[in-house]
Image 1 (cartoon, rainbow, N blue to C red):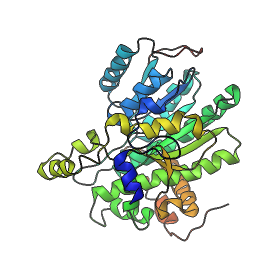
Image 2 (image 1 turned 120 degrees about the vertical axis):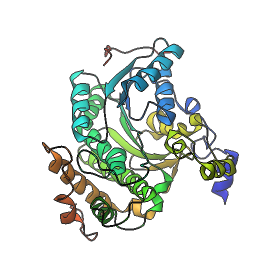
Image 3 (image 1 turned 45 degrees about the vertical axis):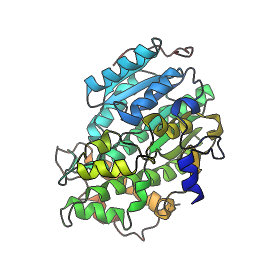
Length: 361
């Protein structure tokens, strides 16, 4: 009850910020920082890109639609003429595209301080599979980000070691992750093979649960390798972005009318991402879950270290199975059945200069 009251009133928590804080309010000057932000062509991602660029960061926008990304870039530069914004092609649902993006970025020789895995998809209608044979929501919201992070973590560790500035990885999840109860691997196995009915909400919840579990395991592995890089997860809050506007209808409009007092604006929804990515208070904090710019508790399923390690193994198996595979091959066929049992335990572009810049505007 107290938490609900704080949310409605926008009362600040221990961080000094709350549900009504905006991205601009929580983001300090960033100086010579490079940030990659997925899903930055609209909504929360676009606002995150705008604010980080405004605070002086070089922003890289990966996107399927070059036009949408260039439109965002043009708006940012119009507001901040000195802003450095790069656009590179990326389709997160395609593992080949993720690898190509990583190769292109690494070839630029730029440092990498911030990786914000923000892109999200809510599938509509019937089951859809990625070109790699993976359920589309899971492929886009989680698996593509898993591979992207894996491919770029080395550059982030190198940048942190060379500059002394801690790198930060932010995975954007959702409180919806708590809506899934059961074995996520078995669910993916059965739904991919059409042995159970497809439920878009369940698929979305599984992908968001995977985001939180990934964060936990990633934080542990970064610490083990001695990298000065943190990984945290955020719930941005309830906001009407393109993700849910695509579900327009009388019922949807009625629900959003009734919940209008609970909805955040996009600047407010982007605040937690920006806070975790940039604020000094979060320095050294890793493996945590944030909501309303404060630490929060994820669902019990999202705190299971064995499930986090299991997800990592399954993800690596899927990626390995898809290496050099033909389009539409079901890459989950081999690894998933072998790793299904829940009791399995874990074993313990636009050119830009790399020189420092002043705040853009």
